[in-house]
Image (cartoon, rainbow over all chains, first blue to last red):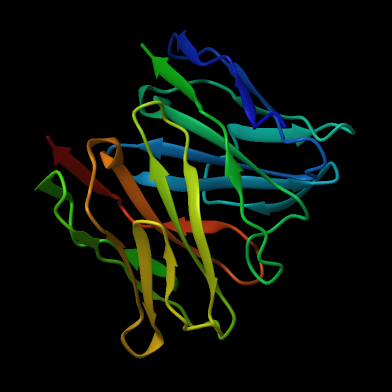
Length: 117
Length: 114
């Protein structure tokens, strides 16, 4: 069974540009969450999608957005890139969505390393 | 507010030593889940264990064991007879009950030297 696939693995963009990252979840998983990992802030939750609907959103500016398609694949977009957006962006998928009360563990992809110059 | 604290930033041990990674959490939820993930240099987070707030039974999986104590809000992880392949960053995480999002600690970098 294929794991979570994130593309591209590495990306270099210029300040002010926009970027789109892609995540293909494990087959059968309907929930996709996105996290940003930086040395200073650690791992921070961006948002979660379930059945094409955004269920939860972290504390990030509106420049960060996402969507989920009917096949559960998800994309996240960052507009007007800033140097501080340089990070490892991790996507996680889970079967029914939510790691809380439903207790379904999240499986992570290898991430997309974004560098903004 | 929910919070996870991993006080140990870096730990260095020699192969075959036992090592314990500490995790302390804060939450007002009565129902919550705790997790440990391993992040090797490749970057992906590898799921190790999930524990719910109603199950304080300790768990052992091979060389790995976990000690969950609600009284001290701790969920510590022990690796017995460490190996070089255990070298990685380890994260403890707490699920936020209603949203399902994971709140991570800052991570502990474990270096196992041969």
